[in-house]
Structures are given as structure tokens and as C-alpha cells.
Length: 353
Ligand code: EPU
Image 1 (cartoon, helix red, strand yellow):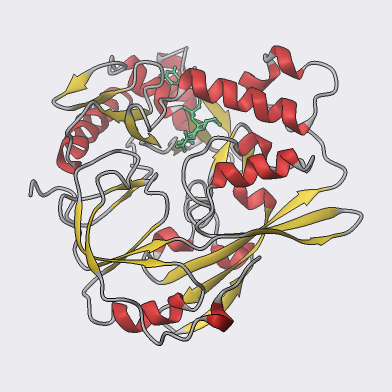
Image 2 (image 1 turned 60 degrees about the vertical axis):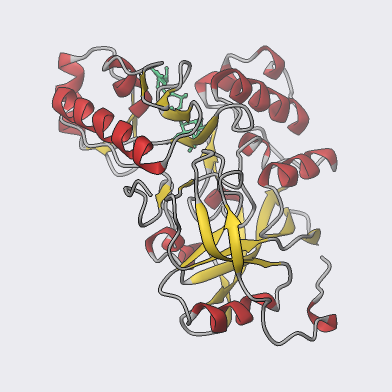
């Protein structure tokens, strides 16, 4: 990994400037940041700690793929642009790959597959950066980041020190981590993933079991291609239709509530969890309430996946929140289940200007 720290003699970051974030969030929500800086170098992270003290709030932005941004962002926005990928270690049982936080996540997955290194292929085509991946513990098609996580390097803005964090320190949960619970405290600089040897495909997810490309002995590339195909068929491309992936988490309910619901709604989709509860498919609940493909102002529910809210053009965060609230209410009234948003809703999002 190329580090520029030794050659960089600046003692502070350039003065923050105004930035239009409308094209820098995948939801394509109209958003302006009066004070914005880019972090190109690890040495910029301690500098950010000094600069951020002059502002009431700090928002660290990666690929902008999991945020609902307000029309005007309060405080300082720091865009992470650190680059580099390297094989950091290898033995008989695994490879460790280290990637800088500003790299594209999908770019990292594709790079590993190209080298013939399996392990991340189920997580192909997830939008966003490497540094954002641990924040929400990204997951798809039977694999979560925490299962491939070796560690990360971050700057702790509270203690003003570099830290190396392992999985337990990151406090990973379902689409959750300590970084989501204490926003603005750490800036992630790089992430290390473990790619197990020998590689074994993870094909338990129903969509993969049915896939014609995956019969016999598939390679990491076969799984990668299949996941890309499935995602392209179901999920809207943010470059074409603004969205932030799943807008709600799949809610986990106690077994008794699951059984009672199933008795009333036999089609209910739920998966047993290690804690004895059941994870319900929020997409199914929303779909059954008749929301799939519906619009409310400039926003709507995607026509092929009810869990994804989309921006048909010119939307602001308040439009998204109004739609989300209408869906949340309907699902609660019908099923008694409360849906929680999955993306980070940045303060000020409910304001119109
Ligand atoms: N379903 C419906 N109608 C819909 C959508 C889904 O009936 O409109 C049903 C499906 O038929 C299926 C079940 O709900 O039986 C689950 O649907 P799917 O397999 O598409 O997955 P999901 O639970 O909707 C989750 C993740 C996705 C991830 C996929 C695949 C969350 C919040 N979402 O979606 O992650 O790609 O599984 O692993 O956990 C994201 O987090 O942004 C994201 C896209």
C-alpha cells in the first residue's frame, strides 16, 4: 500500500470549502455542505481532529451509499479518498488483504476474484467504499463482512490516537457496529479482510441454490458472476435510479410472535436466528401492504424489491422520510412489527431547506 505520510509536510488540512453533495450520495438527494474537506493521506486524519474542533458536528462520508443527507449538512464534512490495496499476509490457512478506506468495495471484491482469491464474492456489487463496509457490517447472499474481517486501522478523534480494532472492538451486529452507534468518533483508514484457504463456496442462500451457473464445482468467479446477475435483476443501479439499497432492516421478532403471525399470514417469510427469534423479510411485509412500485411525490418503492426506496428525481431527504414513515405505519398497523431504517439518517434530514 502506498503511504504518502512521509513526504507530506503540511501541518493542517486546506481550508474547507462548500461542496454540492447531490451527486456524491447514491440516493441523489439534493444536499449542500458549506464546509467540506477531502482526506487523501493518512496524515490528514490527525489533522482532521484539530480542524473538527471548530465545528459542532462532523460527518465522515465514504461512497455516500448508505446515508440520507439533509438539504444543508451541519458542521464539517470529511470525504475519505485514501487509496491502495495489498496482500498483507498469507499462510496455509488464509490470505489477509488490506485495502484503504477510500477504495470502492466492489473494486476490492473484483480485484480479489481476478487474483483467484475467493472469500468476498458473495458481497459483490454492494455500492460504497471499503471504509463504509464495517460501519454497517455489510452482508448479502449468506455472508457478512464480520465473517471475513481481520481488523481495521482508524483514527480515534475523541482520544486523538491511532487504533487497531479487531472484530470484538467493532461490536458488529446485523447491519450495525460501534461506528454506527458512535458516529463521528472514528475515521477508518484501512480495513483488513481474511480470505480462507481452502476456499469453499457459500451457496446456502435460496437465490444461489437455484442459480444455473452454480451447479457442480463453481469457482469464486462463478459465484461472483451469479451474485452480480441476481443483484442486477433485483436491485436498481444507483447511477440510473437513486437509492441507498435496503431502506429498512429485516426485523427480528420473538418465536412466539413469529408463530402467531404465521398462523394469521401463512405466506410470512422468516428465518430462525441463533438467539431463538426469527428475522422477518421486511420486503415481504411491505410488499403485502401494497407498497411495491408505489410513488409518493418524487420518491417511491422499487418495483422489483419493496425494501428499496428510490428517488425518481429531485427528491429531498424529507420526501424519503415521509414515504418511510407511511410504510412504517402501514406495516405496524397490519403486522404489529416496527421497521427501523437501515441507512444513517443525518441530522437535519427532516428539514425542507
Ligand atoms: N420479498 C418479497 N417482496 C419484495 C422483496 C422481498 O416478497 O418486494 C421476499 C422475497 O421473496 C424473499 C424475502 O422477501 O422471500 C427476502 O428477500 P431477498 O432475498 O431479496 O432479501 P432481503 O431480505 O430483501 C437482504 C439484505 C440485502 C441483501 C439481500 C441478499 C437487509 C436489510 N437486506 O434483503 O442487502 O442484498 O438480503 O442477501 O438485510 C442492503 O443492505 O442494502 C441490501 C441490499
